[in-house]
Amino acid sequence: MTNFYTNFQVDEIGRVVSVGDGIARVYGLNEIQVGEMVEFASGVKGIALNLENENVGIVVFGSDTAIKEGDLVKRTGSKWIFPRERPSIDTILNQKQMNSRGTNESETLYCVYVAIGQKRSTVAQLVQILLEANALEYSILVAAIASDPAPLQFQAPYSGCAMGEYFRDNGMHALIIYDDLSKQAVAYRQMSLLLRRPPGREAFPGDVFYLHSRLLERAAKRSDQTGAAINVGLSVSRVGSAAQLKAMKQVCGSSKLELAQYREVAAFAQFGSDLDAATQALLNRGARLTEVPKQPQYEPLPIEKQIVVIYAAVNGFCDRMPLDRISQYEKAILSTINPELQKSFLEKGGLTNERKMEPDASLKESTLPYL
Image (cartoon, rainbow, N blue to C red; front, top):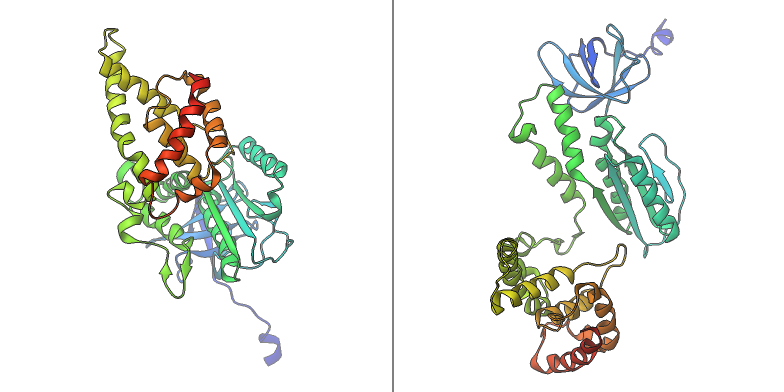
């Protein structure tokens, strides 16, 4: 008899009181904890988020059509945890299946892209772009598309974050991209309202900010010697230029004021044609300052090249140039400016008078064919 009873397993079970919109109300789970996983009789999993006097509010992972009133619900005794094991490279994940494949090069920068609430066609387009660039060799896509239930969209960033932490904790480098957390907030709002939690501003729950700050803190770059790569004075800068390179600060300083004046004057210029010379010059400069930052998709511009292009626009080299020739002009000046001089802009000294003389001469020569 002693041996017979040792094989028994005791589970705490409850019964479904009501179910709908991905939320199940369950009676009888008196010892359950917040965040604990449960399993319904149909095999569908859920997570307990609301512990109330009469019942437990459980968010269902997946479709709730197989769950009916009176069904049994079993505690699992474990919380929702995404295992920090070797994740799959060159794979698209929807949190339901995983493969294990890839290399272990500590120099590689592994990229984790989390698509939250995106259209299926958008995710497919991104996959095609990564394939063409041979980027899937070091990339992971976690997809919780718009048609997926809100709980899956809510949990997707945590799944992606756990994958990035695997690389980080094993001495490798990882970049995680959440696209985007506002859709996760919408999914969390939907879940919270269905659970009848008190709404805050715009019906979002009060802890939505903690939700995102927790994710971003987990994704921060840390060093055992120097701590996190966060500077309280610069990371949330009240004066934006405090976090810029000196050369960029020098070339951008006046552009912010000019763009603000341009937007103000442009609104009134639509109603009249008689403009004085100063106003017309401001409109010309503002239109070109607006055009200069535009660039083709998937063609990032290094910071030293950005400095050269903005320098040309701020100093009036583009003022008389047709707007449709700005992009051609940018390519021309970047090919004529000495690359070593461009890299020197990144030094702490910034743009000295001596450094300005050489680009000025090259810019004047390159500008003439485009006027």
